[in-house]
Length: 286
Image (cartoon, rainbow, N blue to C red; front, side, top):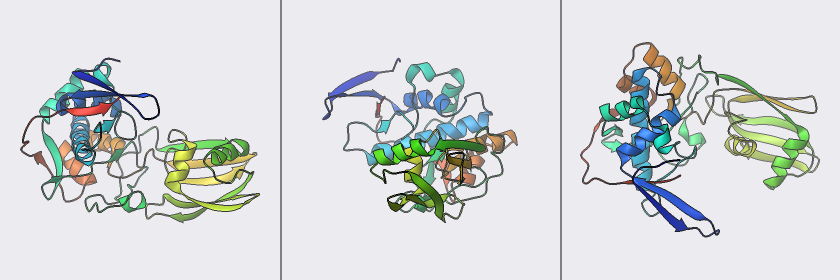
């Protein structure tokens, strides 16, 4: 991959290396937009993505001021592909919204987003500690065209046993899985897993992390025991909090502008520029 501006390399405690790309925020964003969505989507959805990516990066930079880098280049933050993922549409979206942020009472918000909410977004208290008054679970009737709106994931009992054993859970055959508690948006908050050695409870978000985000695509699922394993059937892709990317696409197709889209998913906010004290660089760990 090719990257702009500076590469810095630091030794890591595990014997490996930190490779950090340091570049200005607006240049960084050009390499993010087309990684997170298609830059060929309706124009207002692409601009909305540029603004949320800028806002998220701004907040994470402040949160990690004492660390070597501001952002990871993968899904744990937002996907950044360097020069190879830049294109004219991404550049234009970043330039047309230059400096614009989503603000709550004048401050940049924790502008989280996800691929598809499956019809309703999630409230943040089910995932993170903190006070986020602008992040509310809301109905979303715009993401039904997403190829990720409905999904199924079958897994055999032996594979599930190995996954849980690696994470120091159980270690014997899984006999049953029950949904112990759901959130208001019907996402799984707690699971009860029964094995030959007893029963354990695990949060929906931790269970999804163990099975893999690309397999158990959201915590908005049902589970059935069948054919020597389990079948998970669910809605949406991602944690479900904040902006739904496929919902933004659907809203843009209906003629809504990017500011209206952002104000729908983030409540009581404004979208505008705030003065920057001095130009800076955004260190990214690629």
